[in-house]
Length: 347
Image (cartoon, rainbow, N blue to C red):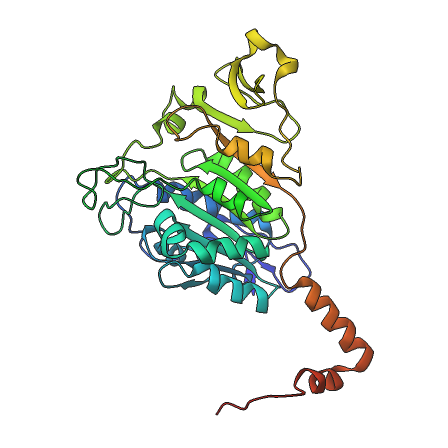
């Protein structure tokens, strides 16, 4: 395979561009949809990996996010509702040489697909999971979703939703995910930075992306997207740095007398009182507290990497043991052992 005159089979360094990851399919989302921004960011970021498109797999479920796979010039699979993590687990487990990505939505991942998502995270499968959260069912025309706020009036809840919403970051942390992050659709530099960290992580990486649905839930994330508001409300988490935010860093996060995190004015408490972010802390309670710092993304809300820790990747230890056994007894003898005992022939 050759891209821009360079071979992917060795020799010259592979040189890739956004065009190498852009398919010839017409992009068909509603005009103004946040998915366009995410797609552009992902296609622009992919060349950084140095992995040719034929070594990358995107798996999607049902929903507006499901179209993503058609617009990436890589291998891909459009699965059924909620099953993308299960399908991707099979691909990643059987082909550890591939880079496997899941693109899903808040309805697809957190409703019928909830169990598949949490088990992929707890197992620490070698997957990168991008969850587009627009807090609404867009493809089926505006019903409330698992992340819609209580009281949300939609076609399916004319008197307001009575369901308490999921906090996707909190859910991922509760499943003991080893990498959990959040970014915003229109913040291309921050999204690229977040994707870069997710791609470098060894194991399951979960990234929630606040994505505006301008048809059925427009403005849900204006506090973090709109000019003049995002500067005030984006609490950017950076490992090893004090958590400050605001146009001039005049506000921050500190631990109050009751032990709980609170938003403070730096001038009132002093810089030394600010909480220093530790994304590599094995115990997830701090990340969990930060996930609950804002109940809804309508004011100051953390974005960035909440947690990034190491844990054995699903299947890797078994693969090493099998390889050691193969080298000791030989491949033929190992096959005999693996197929010994009760076996079935299916014809």
